[in-house]
Amino acid sequence: MPAQAKVKRPPVLDAGPQLDARLMQMAPIVALVTDFGYTDYYAGALKGAVKTRCPECELIDVTHGIPKFDIWSGAFVAYHSFRFLPQGTTLLVVVDPGVGGGRRIIYSNCDGKHVVGPDNGVIYPIVSNCAETFCVDVEEYSGSLTFQARDIMSAVAADLASGKGYPGVPIHDPEPLPGWDEKPELQMGKLKARIIYHDSYGNLVTNIRSSDFPFKGRAILKSKEGVFRASFSKNYEGAGVLLVPDSYGLIEIALSRSSAREVLGLSAGDEVELEEIRSRPHSWKVPALSSRPSKGRHLCLLPVRNALHRSWKLTGKWN
Image 1 (cartoon, one colour):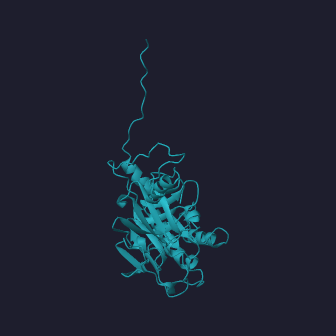
Image 2 (cartoon, helix red, strand yellow):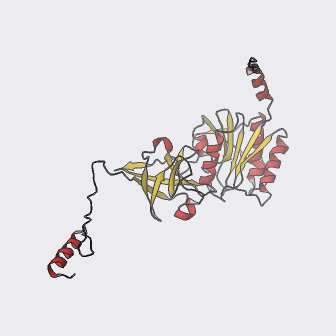
Image 3 (cartoon, helix red, strand yellow):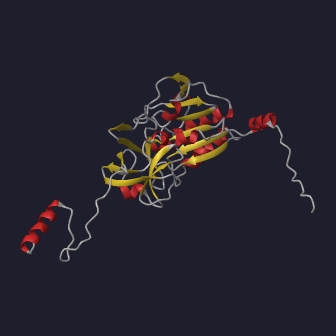
């Protein structure tokens, strides 16, 4: 019997120094989160302005589909995408209903990355965890008051990405995002929470951390739209309303292959209450029904029906 041929395995190389050198040679990255949409020229103009100032930049479109003026959704998407961006990336976030007004333009350096945006709460979840935050002097730039993303923020982002930096003024009071730090409350077995985001599939993201979720079975979900039965599920496969630990590390309210937002009539900002449906104790037994017929009728367990039955047996007819 011929000997089995040995499989040649490639040698294991210690590419630490070479890998570090490759990372140093990578093109700078600017990632974009905006509510510009995909119809107007705004996203293209913003990208062109960044490339003009930093030709070597690589651009990543995280999304331009944030709902118009929806600072909350912009903040949520920016926060959860920031941690997955490569080291050295500059994230530019533009959801700016107060463009050209009194709000500031700010940026932070955080964990080897940068974030730039209007100081209206949209980048607060990121900068609140950064050591330093700076304010941009808008007087140094010229351009349109209604398109400061193109004329100011793009320049700051490009300079940060290229390593030139920007000498901003340190600040310690970035505009907070109302409700971002709100925690669910568990009282008397009832968990009060809030819908903080919904995706394009209609999944409703709550502010309940998956690691802190106290229920593992079925639950009653109460909202302004009604009362629903929900079941804990590890994925989106299942019947009825599902409570799913999602990729954000939060609990989602979802429907398999359907939109929970449309069916349940809920959206971001709405409050919900969850209460676990506890199973019956094993010692509790359902009393057996009598199988003995009584002139074609069965005994009923309800007191009122029992009284009627006794009356029927005495008089031969129902009252």
